[in-house]
Amino acid sequence: MIKASLRELSAALAQKKISSVELSTLFLERIERLNPTLNAFISVDRDKTLAQAGQADAAIAAGGAGALAGIPLAYKDIFCTEGWATTCGSKMLANFVSPYDAHVVQLLKAAGLVTLGKTNMDEFAMGSSNETSFFGPVRNPWDTAKVPGGSSGGSAAAVAARLAPAATGTDTGGSIRQPAALCGLTGLKPTYGVVSRYGMIAFASSLDQGGPMAKSAEDCALLLSAMAGFDPRDSTSLARPVEDYARDLDQPLAGLKIGLPREFFAEGMADDVRAAVDAALAEYRKAGAVTVEVGLPNSGLSVPAYYVIAPAEASSNLSRFDGVRYGHRAPEYSDLFDMYCKSRAQGFGAEVKRRILIGTYVLSHGYYDAYYLQAQKIRRLIADDFAQAFEHCDVIMGPTSPGVAFDVGAKSDDPVAMYLSDIYTIAVNLAGLPGMSIPCGFGAGGLPVGLQLIGNYFDEARMLNVAHRYQQATDWHLRMPEDI
Amino acid sequence: MPLNLDQIARIARLSRIEISAAEAAQTRDQLNGVFALIEQLQAVDTRGIAPMAHAMDLTQRLREDVVTEEDRRAAYQAVAPEVEAGLYLVPRVVE
Image (tube, rainbow over all chains, first blue to last red; front, side, top):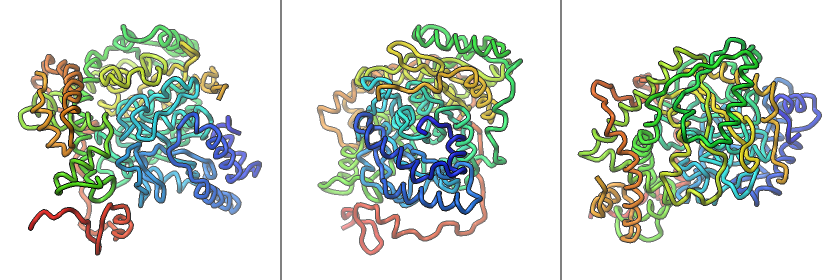
């Protein structure tokens, strides 16, 4: 059961081979046994989960329950979940019990999915290794000396170790795709605006996007179909017709044009990653796809542009944490100003403070044009590069991450080295395009390698088709860590 | 242009984050590392390029001028550090 796809779980539940209470109990027991090693979950609440599973069982018995009803799902702890602690990996929100559900949670609950727990993450989603969490680092189930990637590292580790059938994540600069790659999962960041940001604690609002992390493209397609949808409470939510993202999964790949950005295949990619990516491309050619070289000449500027834009938006978003309406308040202070300064100094960790300071500086008088406006212009150049590339191809492919999972502690003292782990993923967020990572082999130390797929705007169904056909021909996505 | 300790103190004040003298020196060094990365942007000729604030270049939606929020004050204030009689308590600002 722990290896089953969502379709298999759905069938087992519908045929009463297993109840949602039994299925949820199975995963809760795995969490109890393995989470002390992995630290993938921040909150687990057996009673709440089993009560919800009982309701799902009743709905299934009554008939008319949705296809995903009764399936347990883990939520990244950035999604507000009513009655559950929602910490965003921060001391600032360590005691915050959300009074409401995020739109994504509302939709998935309505579809009958059962909340299995809240997963660990980099504090306020700022990190690429899950080491900035107030609740401690997450360990990679493939090798517990390694990081799982970040910021959705808890979700990635949980699904990779089969502590949950699937999970939600969020991706601002690669936070779904990079941990999916480092943990051997399939993860999808939708086109900006497809999934509502309501109740998803904000980091960089023009980049943040929620999405599924699961064992296969098919599972991601089913989850995305349930997560996506217009929501008037998110001012950038797009009013579009509801889509069945699984509709094209089985379409043939003959004639598919795959664009390979020469900048992604230049220096910087580790040899083991390159070998796995090349082998995946050979598999696609075997399936009838053709590869064409494309150029993304400004993609090298995506990391510096991102580290102006994302901190600028973060410094504004995180100003809401003032110790007045929610979150940490310092126990001692002299006046209101001092209360703000001490509450924020105590509540935020080092990386979050660093980004707030960077953001405050680039938005401050005299520097706005030189940094913020310049970064926004370069963002346009990066988006225009993709528009030109998509005139020559249907989907873009390359590595998700320049290397396999690195050691815990290896980059934690060097912010710039850490920032560069997202060199292939960030441009996609700046452009607002959909992107995926799928497992495509193993590199040094037997650690998973991710292949990144980048689609044109709203081309999720095709991207999922391209990923699914590969997963029909290979079994990388079915491999799971053994010693755990 | 590297940041100095006075600038760090000013940014920290604007950010409402207290930092000690020891932290300030370390913060300055780390921020200067990040700004060395960001400096690459200055070399790019962006004359005539329109800034991109948002992937979809959306404009704000309008809605009917009607109340859409329900009253959930009690639930929202339950998570506040200090409230009294439906009000958020903060240190005295006006004597």
